[in-house]
Length: 160
Image (tube, rainbow, N blue to C red; front, side, top):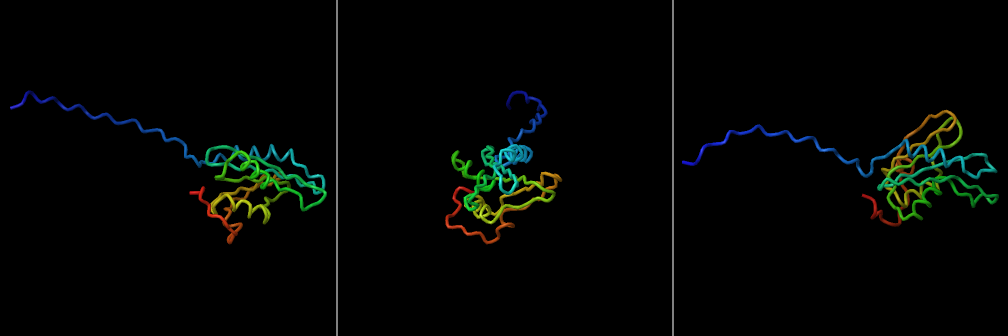
């Protein structure tokens, strides 16, 4: 026979583990603030329609852009594409959200060129929130809803 049996001590309940925030968790407030701030820097002398956009990436960075008009209208760059250009120039390639802030009482959606440019870097599930600066109203959609049959020449290998 073995020695005396030790009484069992009640098992301690492990403290719940704190979960790190998901890498693609979206800080919509920070994105909206960046878009609003950048909108004030827009160059819109012809239309008077200043727009700001902010893209959040998987690693938590925010890239903002504004529209930059040109007397030769075809050379104008929209806010969304401006934000994408900043994202790419910084070496990022995985957007997880887009916020757009435009003047007026109703939210506006990205134009066709911006939709197609977004499709180059983001999946159809990319959430987009558009805000109307005057009324504060917003509308949420996905890229796939805006561009249901977007052209994709390159597989999105960098997107999960």
